[in-house]
Amino acid sequence: MGVATKVKKAAVAAGTVTLLAGAAVAGTTASASAAVPHTFKVCAYGNYSAMADIPQQGGLATFVIKPGKCEEIPIADGSTYGNVWGFYNVSGEKFYVGTAGFNAATGWTGGAKGSTTSPYLENFH
Image (tube, rainbow, N blue to C red; front, top):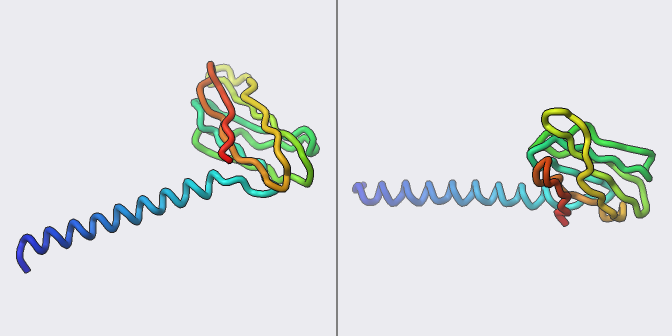
């Protein structure tokens, strides 16, 4: 087998591995961002830790969500809303990020984004 053939086979193999790795990442991203029925899922994608609560569902709440992580709350039927809170990095005091209204049958998935000085809540649909 010549050098050119070996180089070509190595390039094809590397391209296949890259393609498969990219497909795996794309598949993971799509499934992680989809809303799941009867679930309120919040991810901390800002530069701060977050938490969420659902007052109309008996006050259910998540644990503190570290940046880059997600937590979810199982919810009953009906229309409801969930509040998302952030925590200042130095003092640990809680601040308001946003509120999401949704129907339990469709669920809700989103992220606490931005910074402690400019937080916002994003719905991932």
